[in-house]
Length: 59
Image (cartoon, rainbow, N blue to C red; front, top):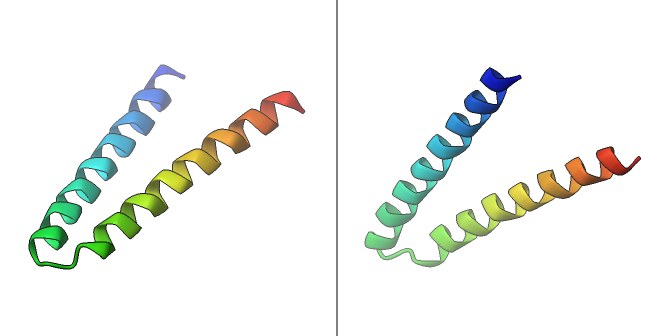
């Protein structure tokens, strides 16, 4: 169980770093709305995943 948690944390950290890098690149290319759209999609997905996890535990 510990390895799975570490693996998930590494994947999440790597994806956040990748999106942060993509955000900085796109923002420097003067397409400022696109990075915020990407970030909002990622944060929405993370929040959805957390609420889904809570629903499964409460059932």
